[in-house]
Length: 284
Ligand code: NDP
Image 1: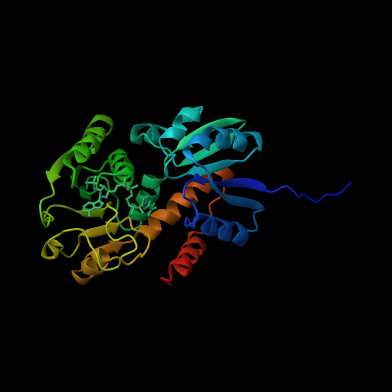
Image 2 (image 1 turned 90 degrees about the horizontal axis):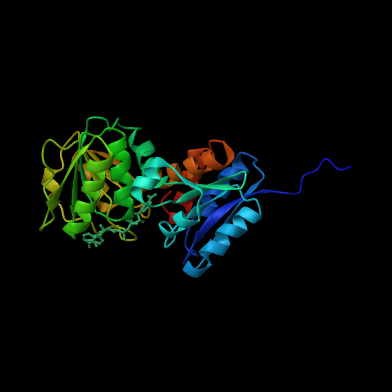
């Protein structure tokens, strides 16, 4: 009887469109680096196919999968269990399959937090969060759960900002309010961490959120969620003012590391994953 095993562990992603999603390259580079016999399959799943895709992953004994746009909210109705922060956020980007049970989590905000914790502990800190979409919502909830003192949400559409501030107030110990974003925003002196969680700067190294650059000061931590290009104009301006800059690559890599920890119980080498993305983005 052969001792060889020709069956790989299966993981992957369901989204649409998916052609330009580089997660498969990032994760498979790390699987190969660690000699893990696992595959990550990038699947184009339309909204009407999500239920069947989830059932297929369970039937084929995948150990887990990511959900990206447009499935992060809708996938919840197909799951058996949802982790606390994902329930509060109302979105799941990482599903684990254990003994046929589907368990959802949200690793976007956790990936951000892992990046942030390399430079500071958010506990007791004051945060100015720009944007009120899915990324901002995940980050705000995780910061609140990590005992940030105060989160001000600033968004072009103030109603979306208020929804996130209320979510933080109702579910975490953090205080949270909303500030109108009219013209160039000022960063108040008592803010410890400024986060761009808008899509401004994606694929465009010269655009930055409307901000008074002179209010960026030494000691401020400035984080950007934009993974490509990683060195956004906001981060370059912030570094020029003596701020500590954190790019969106760290968030992207760390959320992937956390997903694979859920699926395989193994911690992948973040450096291998970051280098793969930098090569792809031409940012090495
Ligand atoms: P959403 O579409 O849900 O939200 C986009 C946000 O950007 C909204 O708050 C929107 O404001 C704001 N915005 C867009 N254009 C402008 C503008 N010109 N001026 C002011 N505000 C603007 O997107 P997501 O939250 O899902 O994603 C946001 C970014 O985060 C994307 O670029 C994505 O690539 C990145 N991301 C990075 C991750 C990582 O791991 N690094 C993970 C997830 C996302 P309004 O509500 O007023 O329209």
